[in-house]
Length: 271
Image (cartoon, rainbow, N blue to C red):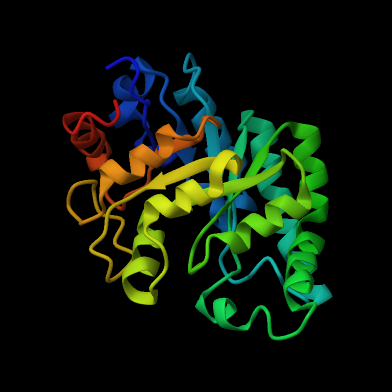
């Protein structure tokens, strides 16, 4: 049992009290989702103060979900890019205040790209450059803070696309995230590789995993065990990686995160 990976969860600040004993017992990884919202980023201090109070004495690895709504990271409009960069900077303010070591950001790639990224000889390179132009100030600040930004697959159908961005950035401040439910949807609907292959393709660039279950039809964020993801394959892929990614149960019903981890424990995969 002690050799099995310890799984944490995404929990809102308001839900921390319900899961305090479970979280503190093993100092599980924690991700706070509130700070993806622009309205909360504009008035983050009350949430920061609550988190500090509720997490006093906890020594696990803390991350936040960064902003994503209404924009893509490859934005070419300079005026819009400035707003995106402002949101990322506000989220990094939160990381600094909470000593959070990780921040989730969203991939701009989708199924259209799988067929069109190579239309022109430089199109793929231009796409990577556009993402890194947007992220440049955030990467510099994240490096100073010791924060990892982890790029999560959303509509991605080829896990190599995000990997190209991380390789081009060549910085510990930008690594990969895999969301098992998003990958499973892409596998079933778009013919993408299964979730375990997203993990194995990420390799040692993997810094973070969102663990959620689904039937492959939609982005369900169901408790683990309710859908049809092959968890044995997912955790076998994780065992082959030495980078120590944050393992975060990300489901819609925060009250069922402990049940989800208990399911993995019953399968002999995690604790």
